[in-house]
Image (cartoon, rainbow, N blue to C red):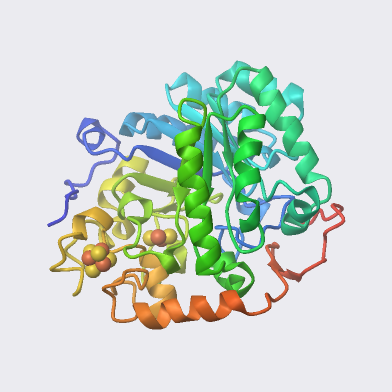
Length: 393
Ligand code: SF4
Ligand code: FES
């Protein structure tokens, strides 16, 4: 049975919506980004700047989000600081009582701008890093000098008294740095470290063979993280996300479809998850045309896989169906061609064995070159790595 039942159509986000509100809104302010990480979760078909929502549109989204009962806004991208009006958006979000988290690669920030954002009400900074080894970090991001700049930004965040989370996506080409990444987070004064093995859809699926770690390396990181969690109690909280390909059960992607998170793309399309546009047969409403609360409750895309009624076996009769909600719809579609199939990350999926074998094979082969994330085209390893690449901005 669906946990969230559509209401009679409403034109505004009124109190009935608040009772079942998403906790967070992921605001992809832009797909522009000076970095070119080959595991980016943005779609392969990146949205260009000329279709982006205006300042007033985003301010309306902030007000509607607060009215819907959303608590946290994750200001993301691409690189959200590429938006010149980030200050206006943060100010409105703070005025309507939203907790604002800036998810940034940091390389475009100045201390003055960060201080201004803090003054206007920014609550938290989540800084992404590619590795602790500067040369490898800059190679992964295809951006020279990025690693050094990030250290500087981490220092500013602390000097301004803002809470800091370090986010280090983990994969084959940085997995050996796990211990040093934990040390780095402590050194820069982060209160939280997210070490999430990357999810294989969008750019990461394109680069899977270059990014898939071996099971042995993954097991070692699990041990390192467990020991560090114990050692650093009260100093650093570590969120560790294991790679799907080596898991027994999948994660409840987005906490379950249409359950806790709402995602708005740079052009205003409202999605149940950031990869939802990869699924066929879904239509997405736009914040320019329909109120956020109405989209959340009644939008077709949100209804499609909400709850458990859509499930097939083995999920349908599984005791975990309301724990993991059958895993990830986008991964199920990407790997099986049917979004209603059980996510092959699940050991109960008939396709799991075959799928886990692919990971074993790919992770032991020589990795191919990266296909870098680029607007309109992709480039092989080395392209644009001089930091002068501007057509992503
Ligand atoms: Fe989760 Fe479905 Fe696997 Fe059960 S069969 S554990 S519900 S993915
Ligand atoms: Fe879309 Fe998991 S990324 S459901």
